[in-house]
Amino acid sequence: MDFDVVIVGGGLAGLSLAVALRSSRLRLALIEAQEPVRRHWDARIYAISPSNVRFLQRIGIWDRLEASLLEQVTRMRVRGDRGGELVFSAWESGVEALAWIVEASLLQDELWQCAKRQANLTAFVPAQPMRLEIGDRAAVLELADGRLLRARLVVAADGADSWTRRALGLEVAFRPYEQRGVVANFVTERPHLGTAYQWFRDDGVLAYLPLPGERISIVWSCPEARAKALLRLSAEEFCAQVAAAGEHAVGRLTLLTPPQAFPLRLMRAPRVVGHRWALIGDAAHTIHPLSGHGINLGFKDAESLASVLEACPVVADCGEEPWLRRHERARREEVVLLQGVTDGLAKLFGVSLLPLAFLRNVGLSGIDRLPAIKNLLARYAMG
Image 1 (cartoon, helix red, strand yellow):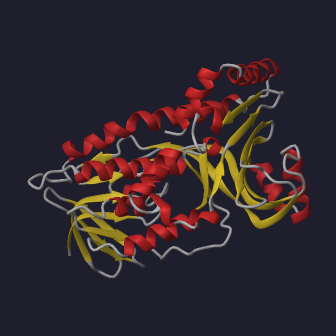
Image 2: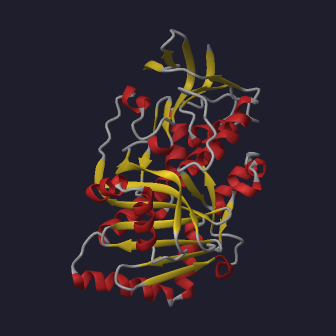
Image 3: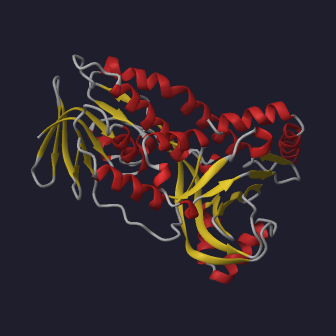
């Protein structure tokens, strides 16, 4: 079977790329191990930046999401471990919201439903890639059932441990943070009023993200031992510790979904395009979750690559490396900058020396008193 583009991976990045190309002349294939499953109150929660909301609107996804399941972040309070504080406000930044909070499975399910209706897309689900060969004129992907797919371009969107990246022979180095991100959802005693909180603590970074109604989701990025200890707690003890760590900002907490944990690693592939291949999303880079930009980078990758592919003339070959370098150049700066900033913050607040702790907290409060700089940071984060 012949295609222009084969996308390996039906996560948010891969599906958004497919949907973004729905009106193109390109023949698309999507490879995924299983159909997305819609979960109620999914523990995987994403903060979608306003620029990516606009991207999802343009590809016809955002306005199809049930409004009652979305929550706006209108205010964000960032607190240091020694009294420093930085507050962002949508009103001060002149925008409707700093971010929108969405359940991962809700967004993935809507992308999948839209992709299935595309005339130019053939979905191979369930399917497992087994072999990949890159030739001068085409890439050939063999599935586990023996079917052969030929394409001008293969896109790896299959996550941080990408099979496609390994099949291409691309070596990447993971740098473990020796931390885990503990996630869970809660019912709150008091309303959150659209406020997101983030605490830089001695035992990691704790974030409260507002959900619809009197509910929140948390991400607690903490050392391995601390994460394991949290997961061993009873529901009541876990709720009490999360509430205390969050300074009881929304009162008592009642567990809505059981806690889960995932390892935190930093990775950036040395190249994200080559002859007949491209990497997007976590297959290309991973980032510390303290900034909430992981999936936002993935959506930006999809938007950029879709734009480059759509602009490719009929007489040109969209899988040739010189053409794909446009995408690589467009994405390099943001990825490097955000990885550097989040990695630096993780290191800065991971050091317990008193003089450094004093300086970093003074820095937070100092920026809070400089509206021009604070507004610039907020607008960059919003894209």
